[in-house]
Amino acid sequence: MDNSNNQNSDNSPVCENIRLDQISPPRFQPRTYFDEQAMAELTASVQQYGILQPILVRPLGDEQYELVAGERRYKAAKAVGLTQVPVVVRKMSDIEAMQYALLENLQRENLNPVEETEGILQLLELNLKTDRSSIISLLNRMANQERNLTDNVIRKEDREAISSVFQSLGKLSPESFRTNRLPLLNLPGDILEAIRRGQIEYTKAKALSKVKEAELRTEILNQAITQSWSLRQIREYIKSRHLPAKPQEVQARMEAIPKKMKKLKIWEDPEKWNKVEILLKELEILLVE
Image 1 (cartoon, rainbow, N blue to C red):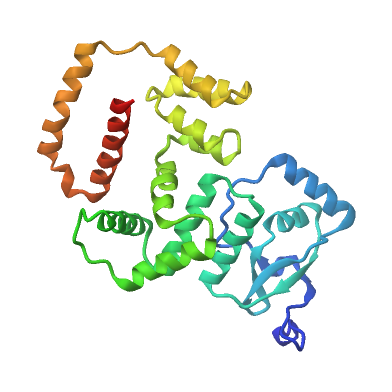
Image 2 (image 1 turned 180 degrees about the vertical axis):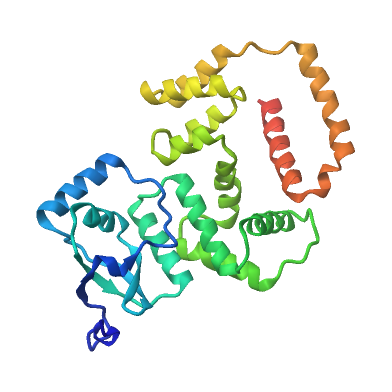
């Protein structure tokens, strides 16, 4: 196929048909879970009417293309045995392809919070050309610098790159992403999977994650899903399954905390120290109440 024919004279992309075997799955797909019922309905529609909305691809060379947007349509076309599909071909860099896929899903509100968090991290990794742990460390250092908790120098280009990504998304600030979304990735695996599948909301997941006993947590999670429990019902049930600790036990644990913090020099780890700050603020609010 001649790529020069993929645009009109006014530079707008045009639709054309290409073979399905010329298209490779996307390397940068924010979505990791596809609802089985929704996929079955789409497949039935494609079986009857074909692909109604073109798939967006980018050229790889040698008449090969990579899927950028429209993976559900692509999967449905393969499932019903189509040999050709309508596409729009657009030249894109890795960053542009990832950003387009993420923005499309965000605008359609198709992503669950876990997919959204991981997608934004991938976008930051591409823009800053570094790995996930470095991105998280950089976000924590930026936050600590804003609070005058550290004098670490942060490169201007790194700060600008992060700011640019979140401005393009128009949904979260770097700080709200750091404090409200990154903790998601530390949730237990069973809870993360439930969020991915759309079985439970993030607020309920946070409440369930406080149950440290894996067996009890799984029990409550299953009941919360099958019985559509509210957040209040989840909290009340968790409370009913846990007897309060004796006052002397709580006192001993609280007295041991400063000693452990001093021994481990926790203030030397910006990420852990930031978490300590957050917990202290919650404790102060609780004491005032």
